[in-house]
Image (cartoon, rainbow, N blue to C red):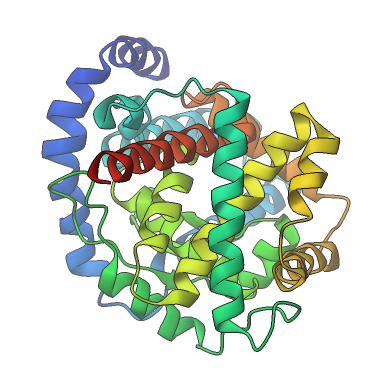
Length: 345
């Protein structure tokens, strides 16, 4: 069964237009709406509980094997059968979105960018971040504080979440993860359960991260499996929100990624540009860094390596580095907006 699925997936990977037209645009929205009808009404994450139950069953299986209550051959045979069924369900339920038409092709964005384009984008993000930070704080040296509860934030993001660059999007929703402390130690801000299609967010993370993580996981619910594309949608929907706090989260989110790319190419030039950033914005960045340092542990790199392998196995050859691919989309989008404004002027 597994070899047959592997051959079928190879064929599907070579037809992204077909996946886009028949699965992502037609079938998947119905699948998501069907799941939402049942799971959105449940106040807690059923997906979290299913993963917890799966872990308990695995531990019981290992205990029975140790006690010689079950034969190893039976475990292998039943395990392969279960894995094959879960893999089939994963692909049909959500996973085929990994092989859809890339977002930049649908938006007609050119992902090739020059050093000057990256400089322009970084300057724009610094300018917008500074402006919002100053309006949200008493002066430019104070970090922005979000006083909303995570539930209120989730409601506000859900209410205005609309990726209007594309049509026919279902309405996503979010839930706080029951395993937020565990996710913190694992180094994860959130995840989409591909079987229940619930988006879970780690409610322990700083609220600026909570905003963009919520939007990122909602993008996955829309069927955008690519991490870079989900990051871009999180940026886009956040900066177009009516709440300046959510706008600030979106601009500073893209700023961190674009600065990282600039630093890789020219560290000194990147540092010079960063000198234009308000101290209050830097303090917000320090809060994010301090949070993850608090939960750092020796197991985290192995968990990240496992997730990296998962992404590579599902059509994202750069693995975890694919999150950075949002930079090209942000640059293309801001350049296109700038060109439109110049034409009007």
